[in-house]
Each structure stands twice: as C-alpha cells, then as structure tokens.
Length: 334
Ligand SMILES: Cc1ncc(C[n+]2csc(CCOP(=O)(O)OP(=O)(O)O)c2C)c(N)n1
Image (cartoon, rainbow, N blue to C red):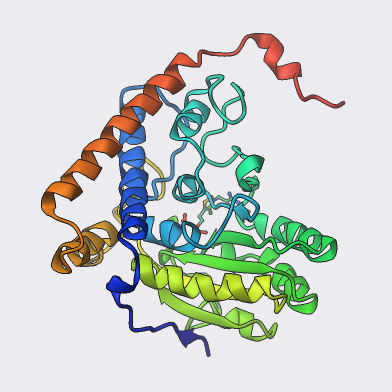
C-alpha cells in the first residue's frame, strides 16, 4: 500500500528568495491562465484549453528547486503550469496559442500540447493521453547509458494512469532502474469520470507502482513545500542511480475539463471546499504572512509585477505576427 508522504515542514528553513520564487511562480501560472481564458473569450485564441487553475503548487513545488534546464519533463494536457515552472518564456507560450512567430513552434501554433523547448528540457507531451509515459522512459534510458545525472519527470493525470502505457513504462523503468520520477496529477476526474470509475485499484493510484518494485507515495499536491520535499527525495534518488519513484499528487480542478465544459457533474460543496480551504496560493500566502516572512505590501508588489509581466508577454506574442505560407515547409524532412 502506498505510503502517505508526511513531513514536518518549517517554513523558516527556506530562504526568503526561494519562498518568493514559489509564490511568484504560482501567481504567474494563475494569472497566465486567467489571461488566456480572457483571450479565448475575446476571440483572440481558439481551440481547446485545459485550465490548470487550482494545481499550481504541484508544478511549482516539483520543478522550481529540484530540476535544472538539463533535466527533462514531459508535461500533461494541463501543462502550462509545468512549462512556466520550467522557465519557458510566457510570450512563447502565448505565441503558440495565437499561432504567431513568437511561439515555440515559430508560427505553427501548438495550443497546450504541441509546444516544446528543448533548451529547457521541455520535450513535449504526446497526441494521446499517457503516451508520454513511454517516451519518457526513452530519455531516461539515454541519460542512464550516456552516464549523465539528468532526471526525466513525467506528468500525467489519473485518467491517463488508467491506460496501458503506464504499465509498460513502469516495467521498463523498474527493470533498468531508470532515472524517472512519475508524477500522477490526481485531480479525481478524467473529464466527468471519477477515479473510482476508471481504476481497478481501490485505494491509491500509486499502488500500481508497488507491483513493479518502484518506491511510491501519495502527497498533498496543493502544498508547495511538501511537494518540493517529496519530489526532491525522488530526484536525488534518481540522480544517485537508484531508479524511479512514483508520486501521486492529490489536487483538484477549479474549472471544467476544458473552457466551455459546464462542469455540472461536480458536487458544488466539494468544489467550494477545494476553492476555499485548499487553494494552494491562498494557503501559501497565509503561511508567509503568518510567519512574518512577507508583508501584505510585498505580496501586493509581487502580484503587480506578475500582472505587468503577463501583459508585456501578451503584447510580445501578438507582435510576433503570423507566419507566411512558406513556414509549413521549414523543418519538413520528407
Ligand atoms: C488515448 C486518449 N483517449 C482519450 C483522449 C481524450 N481525452 C483528453 S484529456 C482526457 C481526460 C484525461 O483525464 P486525466 O488524465 O485524469 O487528466 P485531467 O484532464 O483530469 O487533468 C481524455 C479522455 C485522449 N486525448 N487520448
């Protein structure tokens, strides 16, 4: 049975600089998302968008202080949270949504799931949910056999974890002790299907890892410091060559599966509880204020700075301009 990850955390053991970085990253993720939704509503961005609001701590905590540009991540389809945490410039992400030359695909457009930034180890997702579980084992293999200390982190949802690619991936990573950290973003729903309707395992998704001999745990994914600690142990373990770890991070979506989903299959009291009592940013801000690490004024200044960086990024993305038709032939090999 998966271990519940618990640890006494003393916020004073973290430097103010690091705490600021966590707070700013989470606020940036949320404001990026809210502004993207605004752009969709204004008709400036089209296509599906899967909001990551409510799960900011999961990405910021796992990535910011644990991974370098050399480490690889495969994000999930709510993955702007992860791309922002890994340092992909906001203008490039907006550019991909707008289809402008500023985007990582330089005008081909990408929406949420087809962007990549190899210079920061962001290698993409895959067309179908869970496919990144197989591809991630490939990069971990390359790191192991070329003798680097790079770690591959694979993000996927509870729905993706109900598919077969998880098992092939766990088997291979367990067999070869590959430097992989599996992070299952368990927000309880795959579109409208509750996790109890998609998994034969009745306790925790992390229990799947048990059969493959892979250490595993269940962690509160909305607690940014706890998330950092759990992933730190897993990353260090992978760097020492001791193999993969499976982390099930519990969280909840504040919005529907995609923008436009009425989200009427959720119990409103449950949603209210997550928003009011388990919001990762609200709780982290309260912790910082209660410990006199930041003042209200300092927090307000960070929020203001984030807002101006977001607007600057949107302007830069728009100014990138649309590509000419010749663009589709660039990078074409056959
Ligand atoms: C193989 C495959 N089946 C179905 C889909 C359509 N689809 C996209 S997201 C999604 C739900 C995924 O749920 P989960 O993995 O829990 O992630 P969440 O949306 O909750 O973050 C589905 C069914 C797909 N992209 N690929």
